[in-house]
Structure formats: C-alpha cells, structure tokens
Image 1 (cartoon, rainbow, N blue to C red):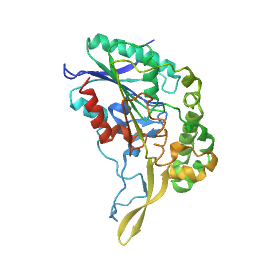
Image 2: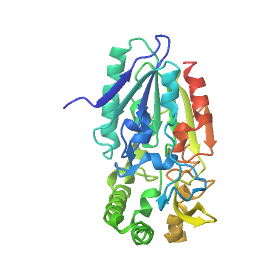
Image 3: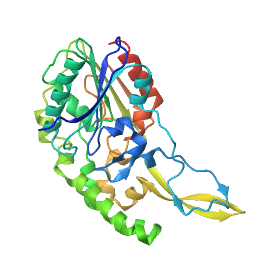
Image 4: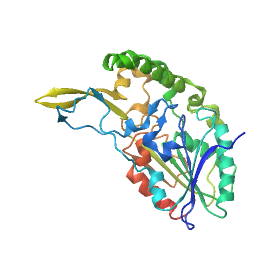
Length: 323
C-alpha cells in the first residue's frame, strides 16, 4: 500500500513538530489551503463558510444570488504556525469517511516517519472534529515524544448529528424554489451525498455510546499537555438574493444554515449541536471538552471558523512555544 499523501514543512530547528489531523470527509487541504478545498465528502466549497455579510452595491454590479463576500485569504492555525517557524505535517487520510481505526493506523505511520525526519523533537497533535478522536485513540499506544494533544470541536462525548440525516430531503425542494433551474440537479446530488455521509457508518461511529466510545481506553499521560476548544456559534452560511432599491443593489437573506434546517426539523429531533449557544453546528460545547484537559475554551465560533479563531490560535501558539 502506498504511503498516505503527506506534506512535511521544515521550520526552525528549535521548534517542535506539529501534526495536523483533519476530520470526517476532509483532506490535508483543510489545513493547507482552506479556501480552495471542499468538505462534507468534497461536496461543499469551504470558502462559503468564510463569507461575510455583503454591503449594498451599485446597480451596475447586478447580482442574483451570492453567499456574501468571500475573503481572498484566511489565516488559520496552520498558516500562523508556519509563519512562526514551526515544523508542520499534514496528511490526507486514505479513507476520510472510513473507520477511525484505519486513520489511527495511518497516524501511527505518520508519527514514525516524523521521528525519522525530525529526530529528538517534541511532537504535538492537533485534531479537528473527528481528528481529535483519532489522536486520542492513537495516544493509547503511549508513544514517547508526544508532548501535546490539542483538539478543536472534537465530539469527546459523541455527536447526535447523524440522526437528522433523514430530514434533509425536504431541503431540496426548498432550495430549488430559490436557485436557478440549471442548478437543481447539482443541488439534489449534493444533498443526497451529504445525507449519505450523515447516515453512513463513519458518523454513526461518533454517536454517543457507540462501540468506538465504549472501547476508547486512553487516559492522561505524564508530560503531555492537553487543551481543548469548542464552539457555541451555529451559523454556517447565508445565501443572499439581491434586490434593487433606490438605485442600489441590496442583499436579502433567503436561506441560512442551520436556521432553515431547524425550521423543517421536528422539535423532538433537533439536537443541541444546532442550537446557538449550545453547539457549533456539528458538536456541542459540552461534548467538545476533553475530559482531562488542563484548559478548555468555549469560543464564539462554528465548526469551521474555530480553525481561524484568533483566541484559539493565540492560546495554541502559547502552548506549543512551551513544549
């Protein structure tokens, strides 16, 4: 079997090595070039989650539908650590929607390569979402040299989001009423693919009380720093329709996720992951707490934006500077 698709970036000799572990249905570009990659099993461009509310514009700039203003660059935690001279490693899991056990085997392979490439250096693991669970399962091996485990929006107590998959289908006709006819086929395909992901075995592995959690046997190790971060903002994106008023174009929200999704969900199945103040759209703030974290931060961030949240970046950098 070929080696995992891995990118090593050597930094300053006095800096530790940071290994980034992506979440479910993503790849290494989630860290390396976030505005150019797609998530949710490569169905949705990540850049739309970085969009900000647009301002009114002149009538000459005629628009119909947009997701807002998409930035040309986003400095996430990896970009900042690169600028500070850390040694960085990112890899794409061979089966990003496969079992956690397979990703753990790959991480074991990656760490052994890191030890060969960067001998005698401290190693830190940073896992986003499911990536944090991959790191925790790997830590059961008690491999020397690991000095920090940092998790971002990781469902340490599980996530109930897979239970809403069956309710996504009503979104398709709602979107088709808004979007141009030529996009309808693509909309149906994307919703089907996301629904398949939500109802697949990989996400069921993340349900509270799943076999994975019952068999998770890690514990805090001496000399390892444990830090976790969670988000309490659920809003992911807004779709705007532009209307002419007073010789200007004004954006009017027509679809907001998750609000538009919550409206079609029975109250009995709407999980806390989707409730602002309780979750980040995918994981609850409560579940994001690593049980033995020395420090935990609940931030005003959603499941994606937490990777470029300034407070998270500052706190992570301070920890890594000391290992």
